[in-house]
Length: 184
Image 1 (cartoon, one colour):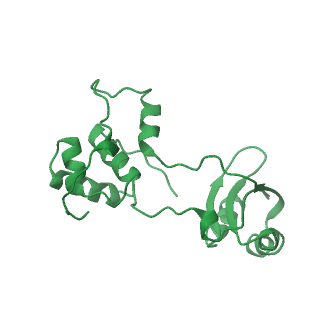
Image 2: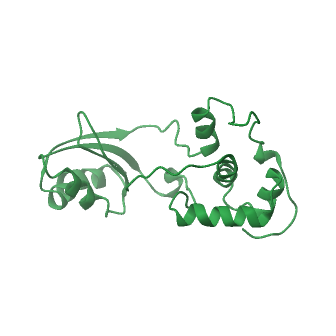
């Protein structure tokens, strides 16, 4: 996933925060909470999506949906083959995260597996077949996930150390309720 830095203004961040808390929330409701028009919200969301900055999606609880084992896998790869190895592994449906890295691993994967046998097959059979330049693997089976959050409002607060550029705090959107029926 190539990265390019695109500036987000305060309103963009507030819209992203609202949608991260509830992706089904109507544009009208978000607009009311932010004191902007529904059309402004709609246009900004469309731009954020077109620019590849956001995607509104459903996030499920893996353990409730049949995932028996989660793992982080560090791969050491022959020099010159790191990118092609990562590209080969992004195609697998049980691979949830792929990153190039520095240090102990050249490529880091997060996988979801049916059970320990499925994880073992993936590490011992699938990876060597798909990525022959892997020289070693180190697998960390996840025992208990204590945090797996994508609450962008928290991230924006961290970036700005709890303050907004114009001195105003971000409204608490989760406390705003609209009984209207507008669609997002």
